[in-house]
Image 1: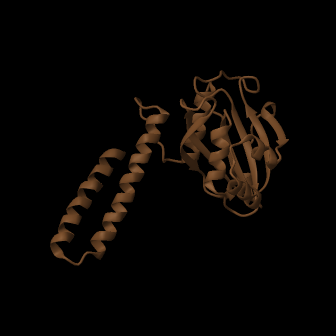
Image 2: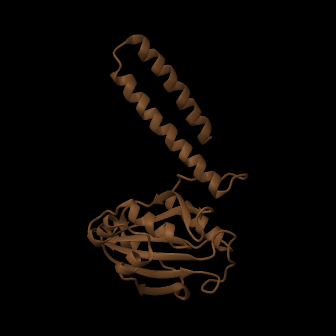
Image 3: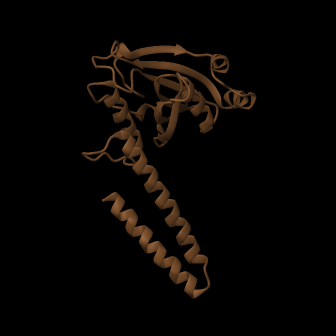
Length: 218
């Protein structure tokens, strides 16, 4: 269980109907809310008023939502709908029986839709014992704290170098995932190809892509 300072505790149950009323939810998505979610609690509010930290340039407040599930899964579009419409950064803590999982996104202000956010990528932890879930509050402002949360949840999938910021790390991670998917596709083609000349060409391409991947992760 996340052990944040008492000063951040909010512990307010939010009826699912509130989301239907406030968010741009289709009838199909509303049915998913009903089918998949048992309850939603607004557990914590991390802000300059509740923590001894400064506001960030991009992150002015971090909300922690605990979502109790009816099954051990949730449709990504449910998380996205909440994330896009609420004008704060959110840590989603999913709970199913005694298990838990954390979801967090890289999100930016949507310049074409005032007051809305553009969600780019999601990172999530493994399913663990709920009481074993943890996030350390690290940083002197909310930008730093949220970026640290992302790094902790991503667990190695995001890499920050001296000259990079979190947005660049997200872009690099997406490129690595793209290369890894392409490698798997080429490996399958090499395995299934029966014509020798084509197999050689595929193997040459595979070596080039693997070399590029190695360069990217150095």
